[in-house]
Image (cartoon, rainbow, N blue to C red; front, side):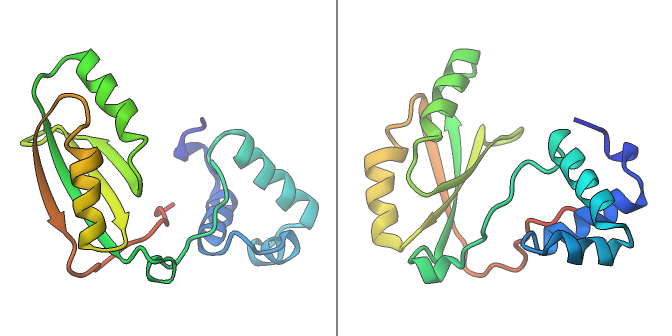
Length: 156
């Protein structure tokens, strides 16, 4: 993957525009960044080829797909070995509604970010999946009351 410092002004401008609207046509994008359509397409393909643009997705409105509740779960494992981390990480990938799993430093070993329907669904998920994850010693749950900022745009 290319370093961000290897990107020029036009590459950064392309990335900013695409982060805001990945459905924009190449013709519209080229006009916004002041390039010919062919040159613009070459740059976008290069950014994809280098892995800077990982993939293009549709962002859904959680409430409209019955997943309005956001839950953050702090997990402490019973031991800190490479095997226990690997086992936990593999199992965490299979948790229903898990959007993110992060290994962290500090009081917890991992933070999971879950999108679920409601408290009842979380209780089922907690009892049926989360506490059964390998090596889990302790779980702390944080229900998000209000989302202040949630973005997928990186400042490039």
